[in-house]
Image 1 (cartoon, rainbow, N blue to C red):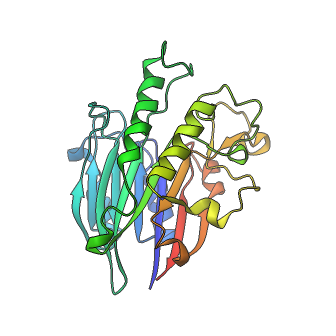
Image 2 (image 1 turned 30 degrees about the vertical axis):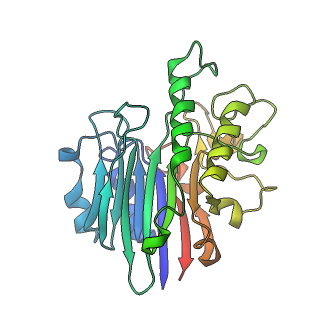
Amino acid sequence: MAFSLTTWNINSVRLRMPLVQHFLETHQPDVLCLQETKCPNDAFPSAAFRKLGYEHMAIHGQKGYHGVAIISRLPLSDDRRQTYCEIDHTRNVSAIVEVPGARRIRIHNFYVPAGGDEPDREINEKFAHKLDFVEEMKLLQADAERADGVSSILVGDLNIAPLETDVWSHKQLLKVVSHTPVETEALLAMQRAGRWVDLIRQHIPPEEKIFTWWSYRAKDWDAADRGRRLDHVWSSSDLAPALRRVDVLREARGWERPSDHVPVTAHFDF
């Protein structure tokens, strides 16, 4: 049984619905996880997704900011929304997807706080919030539901590029939010604590550079290629052997009125 899942920080689902439609029609993943949907639940373009064959949704949004959604061609159940740091910024939604004849998989979709510009928690509340958010994520265990026959996948814009090859220049970004040592160490500690497998780096060797985000500020993002890997796909260890490939759709950054993030798709064969 083939199964594919895409994560994509869309930076406003209503504004970029034509791009989402093009992607779904062209690539047809079984599940699409979006971050920064930027709309309340009652304004989410559910009808457009249903028309495209994606009838199952778990959404958690708010007006103008943040927001996450899981959109699926396969049935979803037991959807949950969790508040982190006692601040309800609609940054997390999870649901179980039923892969016919194969697996039940809990999908966790996250939008981790960006953290502002100053990497100092004492003077920057946004950075402190980010670090506290990641610390709370340590409680999330990849094998939490294995006794019930449920595997786990964690995806999303985690807003941290942990490896030296996840950024265009390790040396120049050591003091830039998203690649500071305190952030990268926190994310890797959270990954270890939850026993998560980094599927992108299982498929693409850690020695090879790979980016999923390019700033809007660059005049020619493609030529400058000053990217970062902020978007992640992790899983419980039992799913790792079934991974066939991971596609990072770099070309999407060059589409008309694009998000600054691109779709990342993991393909499995169960």
